[in-house]
Image (cartoon, rainbow, N blue to C red):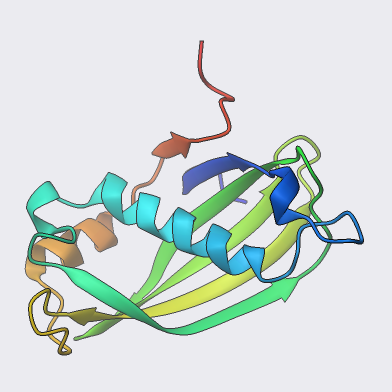
Length: 149
């Protein structure tokens, strides 16, 4: 995990765990979606977000599991844009246990820009391209309450 990456923090809830008392594998897709959405919300001009000029659809999501997360673990998810094409972009995400630093999973998500009205593939707007290039370094969103008073 690189400290300059954008970070999203969340705490594992009871309902996200399975009978083995670890986070159910499909929940990691939810975590990736949450982290990617918060990343885009943090870096992008407001007028570009959904209900604005920019939206996207996930066309590929690959997750590699390294270790298990458990109830009440705080996860730190680092997000960075690794590729920006004409209509698509790729984000790399690393999911760590915040307390131990252990790498739990890595993910690669590819999205395709779509027109908000027609949902047809479109060129990534220049404002979005610029925001993704700047990459949100040092920004964080804390839904775990780590950095709250």
